[in-house]
Amino acid sequence: MNNFPKITIVTPSFNQGKFIEETILSVIGQGYPNLEYIIMDGGSTDETISIIEKYKDKITYWESKKDNGQSHAINKGFAKASGDILGWLNSDDMLLPGTLLYVSRQLNPDKNQFLCGNCVHFEEGSIKLYGSKVKILELNDQLFGFGFIQPSTFWTRKLWLENGNLNEDWHYVFDCEWFYRLRDIKDVELFSTNKYLSMYRLHDSHKTGTGGSKRQEEIAKLFSFRECEVLT
Image (cartoon, rainbow, N blue to C red; front, side, top):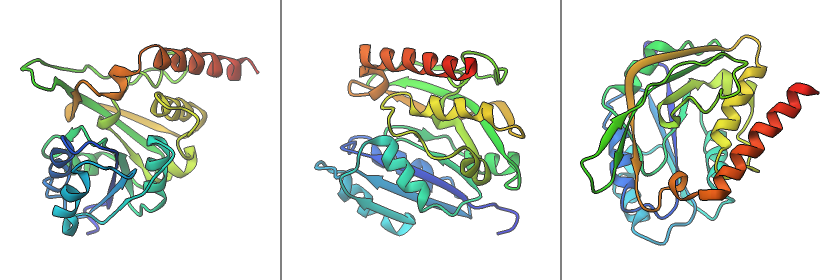
């Protein structure tokens, strides 16, 4: 497997039985020969567990226990990870075919490296879809971290250990906060690609779409928090 660095994908899950089978199939269907797939379910009461069990022979580890939210579930998953390259995929999103093989050829596990790609956004129950236009922003750019589409981001295990866990105090923008912290790592290497790596599903219970004012408050708080850090 030396030519195929181990890739760990973590899927946090809670009552997304309507979508999680497509998520699982998009990961195990990659055909990547050195995959570690971990699902951390928060104690779903819908059909999620029966779907996970359907594919349990293809899943490296899974559990269904009450957790403290999405970021906590992801942190628990990565604590069990042994991959050279890491990423997480929410239980309503999907990887596009060939993504993991492509990612394995772009990142060097011996370095602090981060890759972001493009993403197809689509509305559940609609024919509407559109693609993102991702680019690497300057490290000192105020919007750094908001220019990435999370399911199309991957990084080396070395970088995860250097940057630390997700901050579980954040409910909506913990991914952006983690991306922000990359600016504090002197030797981080950031790469972008025009290639589409994932599909991002918009639906009625979509967390980002339903966050409303609470999500906006978190965004404002994050900007303020980072500005204070720079000033001090």
